Structures are given as C-alpha cells and as structure tokens.
Image (cartoon, rainbow, N blue to C red; front, side, top):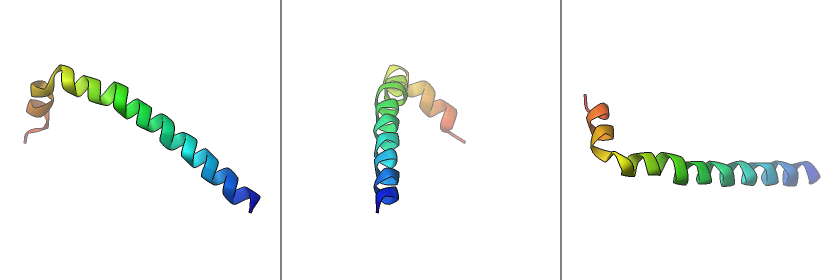
Length: 43
C-alpha cells in the first residue's frame, strides 16, 4: 500500500507542475500571437 501512495503522490506533483507550465508558458504564447499560431497550424 505504501508504494501505491508514493506513485500517486509523485503523479500528483507531476500533474501540478505540468499544469503550471501549460498555464503560464503555452497559453501566454498563444494569447500574445494567436494569428501566427493559427497560420502555422493550417494545412
């Protein structure tokens, strides 16, 4: 039972930091230049 709780805790920390990364880095770059992002993704 102890190893499952360690895995759950580490997973929670990883999810927490990836959410911070997505919020501050990815979304900020999208809001600064949204049209350039759309023009790069069009086929």
